[in-house]
Image 1 (tube, rainbow, N blue to C red):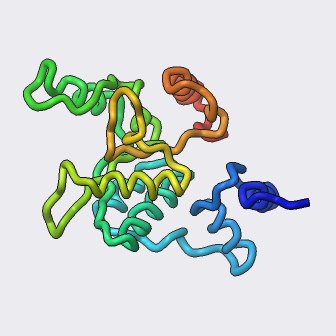
Image 2 (spheres, one colour):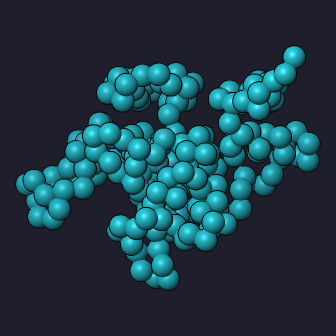
Length: 198
């Protein structure tokens, strides 16, 4: 019987008791490394200080993948930093007010509780050249492809509100759910004190 690479990876993931998705991302490689070599200290090598501060606010399931994206982009010759991660509902509401009831340009269509940033599963990156932050660059598309290869959802592939700096890790229980339904599930889990990824 011939197996596809996805079936092979899925079999390894089941055996290692990690999320089964048929893609070998940081979680799978980390589990393989831990099984063969022993647990790595602190996961992947830390990245720049700003990114690390923001990555620390994400849920543990998302942190190694965010770190891996920064490292993978660097290997491709693109310097990125994680510039935003977890936001409180109040912080999200303040961003939502920008360009509406507060000065500035609109940066989000999501109020508090309606953004994946509010649940520690989403982060935004910035592309940098030297010390200069590039708000727009074709490099975001390349970073988007790298992120999707790691199993992340990329805001640049959305149909309605394209958000190229945005990445998120969808919980397995919400795999086939529309975004609105997933957000309702996330709010309910947080209200009940239930884990987001269980």
